[in-house]
Image (cartoon, rainbow over all chains, first blue to last red; front, side, top):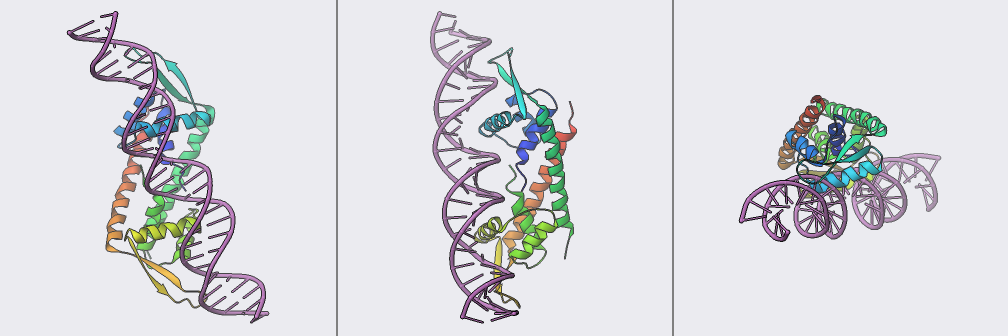
Length: 101
Length: 101
DNA sequence: CACACTACCTTGCATTACAAGGTAGCTCGA
DNA sequence: TCGAGCTACCTTGTAATGCAAGGTAGTGTG
């Protein structure tokens, strides 16, 4: 019915610029969405294998290297799709709320 | 993360007046939400066992009797909760969309 | 009385998210 | 120089959600 709004959020965040997992978790937390590592990593892997995301390893100045993610062309298209899906879902729920018998 | 927007939709529909399963499916379809029987019936049972819904059997003028559902007090409270959850999710996603780096 | 229709429900599977736990590189202080 | 702690990655097992497919039974109609 709604195909995971989390995926939508992740793609939104990555669309704004190269980030690595901890960045994403921070952004989600800032937006008041609680997500844990055990959810995020498998999802990133899945999106990678679906070719919606690409990553490059980058050295960090403090600690181990990081995987920085970006959207592929396919990922950008998919994000546009999800924006529409989301907008439709909002409309549907709105119509259910307004329609009082 | 979002605890099923479908449950929200079902409760919304039932909150507007006594309905039976096929009514709900029609309403969902009218709102452009595709749901099938195999999804709806187990969900209704679950909501019943959670005491959010109650039903009464009613004779039909054409065909077998129907289960008409209504919200319990608990169900009404739960629906208010879900309205808030939904509103927060919308805000969260909005904030992610607006915030362009 | 058999067939079609309506309305109920169940089973098995795929996907999604979480809790919990595990590996390994890097830095810093003793 | 080495080990404790941090950061960052990932995996496994489990619960919940939703769908596809199929099944049961009452009712009306030709």
